[in-house]
Image (cartoon, rainbow over all chains, first blue to last red; front, side):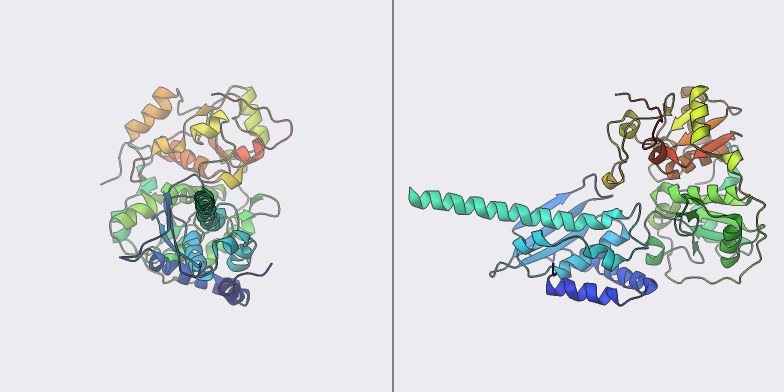
Length: 159
Length: 287
């Protein structure tokens, strides 16, 4: 399975790094997490804000679709969210930017250890996978709503 | 806020204010231990070193702690001598700092303290963090003669004997884990075990009962009420505490040992990830 080009580039960047360099780069991405939050005046097609049992704090995922059907994510993270999850929010917002919701659902999670490195994927850091699951969930809901709307439109035109 | 002088060993705690005033003192080493693997890199107390519970303290090839030689090397690398006062703090209400402190005690390091309230309180008070990693001159730390496993650590057989003898066993996990309603801890569903429940005879006292909302420890009188009046424990009891992997029970071990002065408390670090998965280990469920 190939990854979306932007995500592939990030994976490629990490694959050439030593473990200490990976840590530094992850910190840099975590530092950018705030910049992935919704900007004033932005509107979204779907918002999913909740604290559930898979994460240490509230995570809000916002999805906007452009005219070409490309997805653009914004993410807000509660203060207790783990640093790896913060880093992953920046990585995913950038790496998945512009691809379709259908393509998002197809992305395997096996790129996570390639980015994070074996040393950091361990007990108590598994929430690093959580954000991709949430983004896929949002993409899935959006697709379901689109299908339902298309179906209803079809029924209306037949009537 | 000061440390409650009615604790059995009030000297085992220091306030954030005290630490702020003693950051540059000779003879102390401030040690951050977290669950969040990158949190230290995001910023830590000025001068604090990082000791990682998994990378630095455990030997995963045998699911055990490091050997005395490795402990001595770890201390030497961080400029710690047997005389150094090690002040631990961290995230998650000091779970992992208590865990690291407990491991230091396993190797007999005497001078240990916890910064009450941990990392969150330090930050909430607007105190400074830095990303500068300190470098201390390496010391020579004598290799400890051994680990004090028999004194402050319990193994499966010890916990089983405790259960069969109806001696005090404290399950410090969440009520849902104790009752067997969930096979993992809240927020960590990927860390499940095969069976839910608790060790037969264990009493449920979640670790969280010992702390205030700001992660500081409750007062001596409040702790006595929880563990002595309500649970019926006495300072001379032989007690075993457990959780899932030994970190939350380290927190309770610290409370019982240092704040209430119970002299015979052991931490069963194999905890529920061993017991709940082990063939032949009896369990109880209660709803």
